[in-house]
Amino acid sequence: MNEDSDADADASADAPCDAPLPPGRDPAASPEVRHEAYLVPGFDAVARMLCAALHVPLVALVLVEGGTFFFAPGSSKLPAVSGQLQDLLLSAIARDASREELDVHEHAGAEADGASTPLRFFASVPVHTLTHRHVAALCVIDFDPRASLSEADRVMLADAATLAGAAVVLRSYIRRVDPVTQLPHRNAFFEDLRARAEGGARSLAIVAIEVAPASRFNAFIRAMGHQYADALVRLVAMRIQEWMAQDMCLYQVGVTRFALLLADTLAFADSASFDRLVARLREPFDCQGIPLTIQPGVGLLEMPASKLTTGDALRLVMSASHTAQQSVRGWSHYEQAQDELHQQEFFLVTELSEALNNPASVAANELELHFQPRVDLRSGRCVAVEALMRWHHPSLGWVSPARFIPLVEQAGLMRCLTDWVFQRGLQQLSSWLRDGLDIHLSMNVSSTDFEADLVPRLLLAAEHFHVPLRYIELELTEDTFMHNSEAVQQRLAQLSELGVSIAIDDFGTGYSNLAYMRKLPASTLKIDQSFVASIDESADDEMIVRCIAGMARSLGFRVVVEGVETASIYRTIRDMGCDEIQGYFIARPMPGRDLAPWLARFEADGIVEGDAL
Image (cartoon, rainbow, N blue to C red; front, side, top):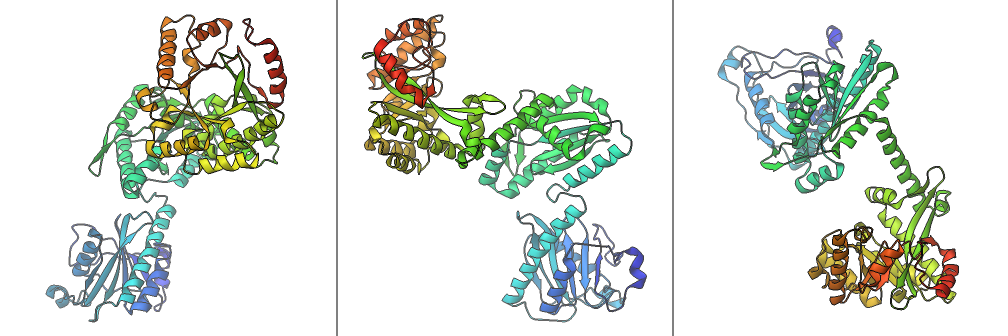
């Protein structure tokens, strides 16, 4: 019922009401009783069940944020709320623990003036949200003496508190308030944005603030729990509010995202103000006694109200905040080109996921493996090929692996990609071996996919295509070896015992710890091409390659040099005592069907010291 219908209340109706308990109230005065349309959604049903099951005449729900809701079945009026009952209710909400009072005696003064019915029984239980945040206390009250609650009664009261917790959160959303920060939430943001646009505003200015990258915020939760993460978000909100001008309105539009509506779009010109906001957010937070820093991103968007749809506004400004997180300055204006790039990356990941997981899809035909030969410098023979993934997109053309591989890792698709390479690569190797080609296949494995079942997955694929394991080499970058070293060494040792060769890829760009590498069951070390590209012009690069090659060979590694693009680089590398070379000077990566014809020509002509192929 609402305020206008109080006079029409039936005497036999259940009576819920919201009675605030302000600090410093007059203990002898009863708070004003007022009725609302919805109170806490579902509270009346929960309270009615409690009254029937526990045989009590009164139930109360006290909110941490303020306000108390009573439920008295069978009456439209509540007993007067005495000072002692208020004390009990305030005490219940102040402590996050259950409580039971079996023989409560009213103050003599309260009984004498007839202000209330003597209270004899009071029990309360804390109410939490699903993330265990304390939001209320659920209380049952009786005016007759009674024995302690039974175990079944306590279970009933705890279950009712669980339902009440969900109702309190729902009430927050209905009232446009986020339950964690008590800020207006995303729906409120959309409503207010629409109201401004429809109210004749010529342009709208929005600021979006990303607290931290999702992976880092999830790390906070894994390490410290949801209560800690909620506390951190509240601290961030407080810092933003300290920076805000009075005419700004702050909303929580996501777990780690805030948005601001600016009344004055000229504020966008004050770059120093946004520098101060970023600097403030980058200062360490003392969250529950633990200092930490976040990686904020502040995005700015200003557009004519007539061109800004409420649904798209938040996405556009969050695109800017995501870009800002990766920048030194920490804030940036919305740029359409950057937004289109983010959208394109999303669709690329979606299409790539379809191609990897559905071999019968149209997208699957866009993926293929190309193979780049590796040549032994002593014999001049092609002894191995490296499998390299290629993607020919119908509208974008050839998409570089440097672009889509990071997207694959971010999207959690690396396992699918590795399995796809195993299947396609070993199928092709099996065909070459049947045709009499004596060639080894090298395949890259990401550190993110070097998990417990990678070995059986490789063995299963090799068995399926009848490929002897001695023809297989796996290339792993240095970070794979350095992280989770004990588990990695066990898997590497298992692969080595089975006959699979191990190569250290892109050596020189990571840890470059030869003392550690010599303990690993790796047989090949590949020097990264970044040192080779300028080897003719840079004496330092030449010395680096020469030193790495010398030390690696002294430790028993077979040394492969990548990025040999010209005859000049080839001659320089040839005189360093390296074992193999790979690069455009020998051959570009090619489809599997082209390798046999290429090998026939190469065996006939050998290495020709002319232009790169």
